[in-house]
Amino acid sequence: MGIVGVTKFFMVEEANALLPQIRVLIEDMFKARDEAIAKRPDLVPVLEKAASNGGSHKVGELLGIFDRFEKVVRDLHGLGCELKGIEQGLIDFPAIMHGREVYLCWQYNEPEIAFWHDIDAGFAGRQPL
Image (cartoon, rainbow, N blue to C red; front, side, top):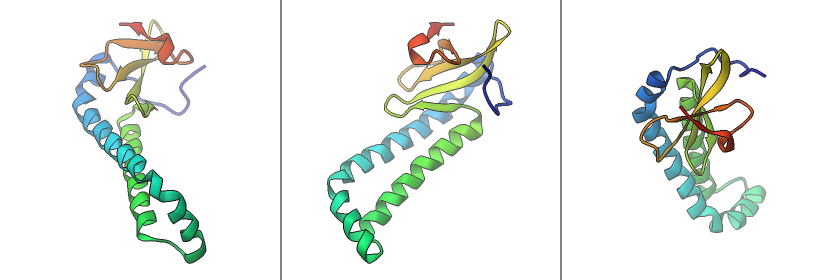
């Protein structure tokens, strides 16, 4: 099983060098997520009303939050890594280890990349580098 459509494979040092930039992106994603959650109680009535009258300011605000979130995902993908966990800020970097494709695995609160896992193993299969 391969990583479909990925051409960039990372060395640990390369991936670690991107972490300052990725931390900023993850923080932006967390802020957008928190704003969306804070607005959630107001949204159902607004969305119901918007469906019948063409929209509202609150719906526009929510769409702006979603746009920010989508930009983070695009920016992460543009760097060559993949967002795997929104709540934890979990990021995977495609890599080659022992002649096979794997992921270097990093979570937002970790100081550097210290784990990897097989492509189909996920977070539960993380192993120390």
